[in-house]
Length: 104
Image 1 (cartoon, helix red, strand yellow):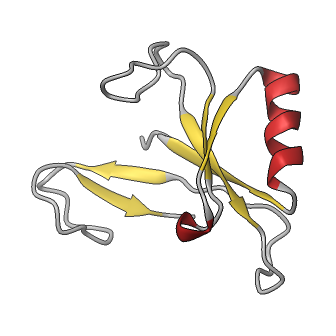
Image 2 (image 1 turned 135 degrees about the vertical axis):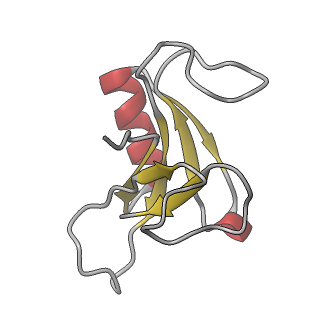
């Protein structure tokens, strides 16, 4: 079984989206500038300051990206599947050890 380890949601107005998710779910956002595509990372709960991973088992963090007119999907989600080093299917990253496949 594959686990979701990260999600991404689109926005047309970053400040409005960050404000909405903060008020609705208590998420904390870190905004990046145009050199990073105006991306925002979101913490959905308490996060380890060293690893940036959620402390609550099963919790995941994610990000917000700017939706452009080029995109044909009404929403977005990015999921990654974790492959063991011996797994033969899927695309492989250049990293050794654990392998990740971008599925969204």
